[in-house]
Image 1 (spheres, rainbow, N blue to C red):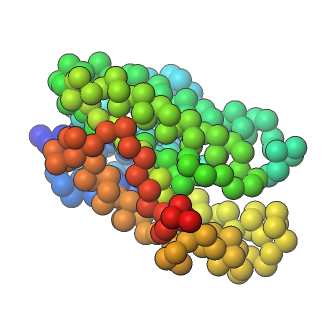
Image 2 (tube, one colour):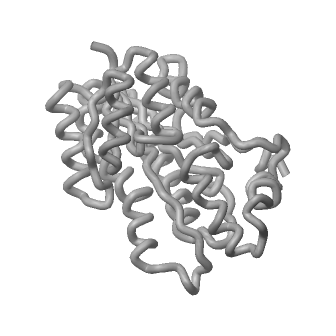
Length: 251
């Protein structure tokens, strides 16, 4: 058996691309998602295991790690990818959505790292990759919860890197700009509403406007960087926030 990897939010988008890439490399992949039908399909296609979890719930986070260890006896790679988006100004931002976004995108990664830590520490090897966002480094209007969660996730990554170093555990964050995923596609109408633009102009005038390379990123491009960070060749790489941002932050 090869390495064992848990990928959250793996039913579609970036998470699916990561699960597929790790599986092609010989890893046993646990596909974790709240979308049962899609998640099961991904797991079948890669020969992995699907676990249906709601990452807003502490008990589901604990169960995900416990069932992985029970099934495979080890856990080498943890990819914290699950997330969702909501767009509203601060004064109108629903408080319950704020709480849900922070739970899924910041508290759940902390809990999963915490629960996976003893196994990684005991085997003196682990790879933690947190899928942050360019919005972990910069801000955009109307995304208060998303930006707050992703900034926090980078901080969590750095602490995990410092604590994991003596035990062969690395922790890194990846910060992509807009990726061609359902999460991004679903934002177009909301961005059009908030900015008073026709939907067809949102991609060019909002999503790609700060970029030097004016296109959407493909999920497989993010997955390729994940594969490197999970390799032996990346054993000296930890505590970093890797940008895949089409030159967004070069300004």
